[in-house]
Amino acid sequence: MLMSIECAGHPRDMGLAQGAAARTAIRAEVARLGLPEQRSRIPNLAALTVGALRGFGAGREWFRQFAHQAERLEGLACSAQLPVDSILELHLRIRAGGEQGGLLARRSEVRARTVGGPKDEKRLLLERSLPRAFADEVGWILRESRPEVGFRSIEIGLPWLVSSVAGLNEAGLAVVAGPLLWGAPGREGCPTSLLLVQECLQRFEDLDGAIDWCCKRPVEGEQSLVLADASGNVATVVSSGRERRAQWGEGELHLESGELSESEGALASQTSDAADRVWLDPRGKRLRVELVGSRIEVELGDESAVSIPTLR
Image 1 (cartoon, one colour):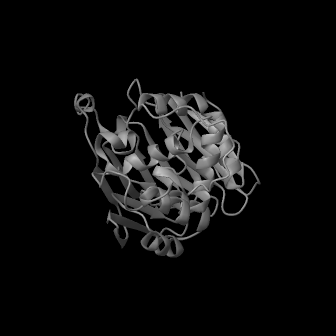
Image 2 (tube, one colour):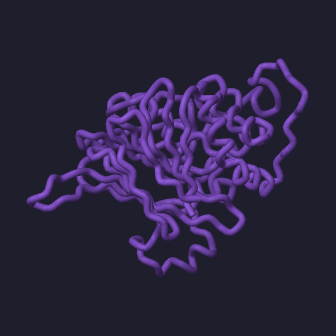
Image 3 (cartoon, one colour):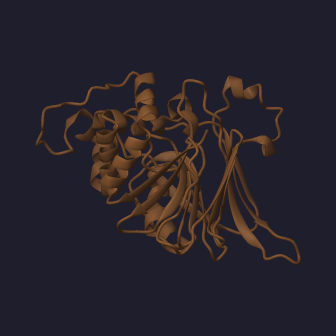
């Protein structure tokens, strides 16, 4: 079943809420990868930006350049009763894509298309297929974020992930991330380009500001992001290493990429319409997700909070 989580408040508060709600799944993923599970019980006054992971390279740049998501990560680790470095390692290892990227690197489709007949109001939809988790992997979650500062949003992500792979905010900005392709392994360089999804959802109401932000932030990866806003504009940001380029578009867009595992190859005869997927409607401010037989549709209205059906 699809797990749903509500996070509100300051960044650390949202991390605490996610860590508490998804503690079992987060700890299972850390254990599956053989990462440390014992959190130090000794108070430590050292700054967060020290140590093997946080003291240099991508970990240091994460805490320096993405303060909100760094605080969210620290809160998540605290509430899940895990070391900060173990949660950070989960986020750094996905930059390599392939097997290390897990669900975030697995083959999927991203589409932007206009729907509506001659007598209907036409609107733009973003769509992403969601590969199914293996038996020993943690699966997708539905999350609502209500930051103290910034836009409310509804997103699809993973229990341990502070960013998301697809989301829509209350202003009508929608962002969908394609799979993480092969990138540089190790801990040097910059954080994953996937952080840009949550940055855009919290900060921007249209494409102009979001595209400019995506092209200037210090991230890296081999990945494409598709963005759309309530006015019907659509654009793609293509990340290649530390370089990015933006392409404004119109009409229909269809991208397919990512790793195809052996078990997924056996399912290749299935049609794309049969896959689990999420749809985003920027103009209607609606998100719909169909996953393993569950179907949820959420609308971001003008109210101060959004009610998400709870399916666990």
